[in-house]
Length: 280
Ligand code: SF4
Image: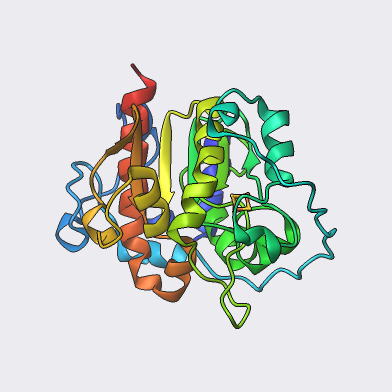
């Protein structure tokens, strides 16, 4: 089965089949089905793209993965690594320093650091806010239901985890509240951890970055915490010279499935921007 047919079958199984139709002569990005405009609903101006509400059903929930027994992370000696030193590190050095990092209090409650996963030369970089319970146990970002949804988002974009994609977080250790539930990272925790992500970005040299949720968007774009994520969607931002698209966090979309169509609009904008950047 050809790649195109394989993808068509996959999309059909996701419930996307009826809204995708081949357009001959379309540019590379749109070599797959082009869909009509939904800008009135989404607030995103995207010629040639329609976002159908039926897309919302494409990214489905799944049962929570059983947390594997994870090795206890050994908290090594406190690293006095400076930001300047981090900017000089290769992948192996960076992973080693992160694994032993005690720069903020999140090190005290983590099972292990969650460095990131994927192709170190990926053109697509996806950034979330930080590990949750499942990620803390498994040592990998975006596992469990939100991870499954992200994988389905990848599939709808003809992408795949680990293949030309890299997934990372703003902070590498799980932030927890007093009840041991997940919480967003605090400003000082993000400040402490961001140099690691910045080094990952410098090593990967992605063509495009997708900020998954408000925390990731505001940290990457260095914006005021009061900025609503809705005001950031539909625009191609920049992190240095790399285009950044802001969309909803998959965990939010699990709670608000009606907004999956808006997220799909964001991903279509990302594919357009990627095609423009990759062709230069
Ligand atoms: S969150 Fe980042 S800065 Fe804080 S201890 Fe973990 S790796 Fe270090």
